[in-house]
Image (cartoon, rainbow, N blue to C red; front, side):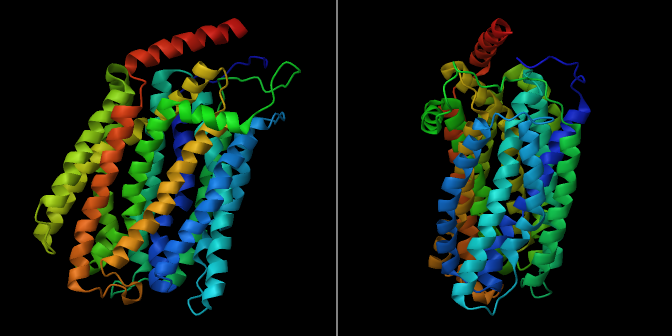
Length: 466
């Protein structure tokens, strides 16, 4: 067992540092919402883009579990912590990784565009995984206190919300011209600047993070070698991890799968692409308002219980979005905003505890198998999230094309296509909410009582080892 050292008491600096890490991730990740518009409207790829997204998911399938298992199997002694070391490496690559996905060469031949997209995405995705997988694994090592973990998860949500809101609000004002059409060269410059800002946030997080839950990383002859396939099998038997993953996939199907359709909705239905970011920011107000209450409410009601109620709120809001008369005028826009506010309330309840739930899922893996396997559990969770983030937009784009969307028309879609986008957006959001309810309410099995039993037994095991 590593030598026990005096640690700084858990406090606000831990919350801020952890929030900064997710802000850094989202300075790169938030650009994915612009990717489909960039490659269909500026680069002129249309349906080719759907094929490209599916191709790069093969790399995702290899990338996330490979890097996660590599981190778990890494037993080197680093100056501070192996997770922090990997995050540092990833933060360097993300400075240019995101920009590689937006190299502005619209007149290049199709084969060259294939190479540009695939090479850029592979570079970006590799560095994003190197930074994001260990970052998510850190939550369980900063503190083993349930309230502290809920606080870290809530502040991570704040970092995520702010990291999404900044580009969400500012980018549409910069990258679209007066006719609501995308200016691709501006996206590339914005991606570089956001990558550098993300790097600075990561450095703050690395410097201020304190590891309080020590783990023994010294191999001895009695310890079995790390088995990747066994770790993957354990993940599929881990109900909390599977439930949290299904919910996260649903959340990202709504956020990423509907992102392109939402952009076209504002371009061609509401005829105002510039305000799309402001509307999305306004819809996030409930997430911000709920975050300070998260720790107290988790202690009182439990994570699973709160998140399930949030999913029900989202199902109701998205059902209303589908059936209410959302017309292409200010009245329709107001109905859309109100529905998004209710949906955001449900999403906010879940998002503030989602990462704490994954921390509990990692503990559950140790409880049932005797192995923590943070990197692999989180990497597989991350893989399925990114599967939703990649395949979701690809499938959504295929549906959009079937409903009449033509990327080269930009904001000048037909009236029927614009109306189709209005219903497609609502349907995608509803699918997202239903998946969240299934994952949280029906699969995730760590309610408040079960969680307390698990934590007590793990604590006894750790004390016996010490």
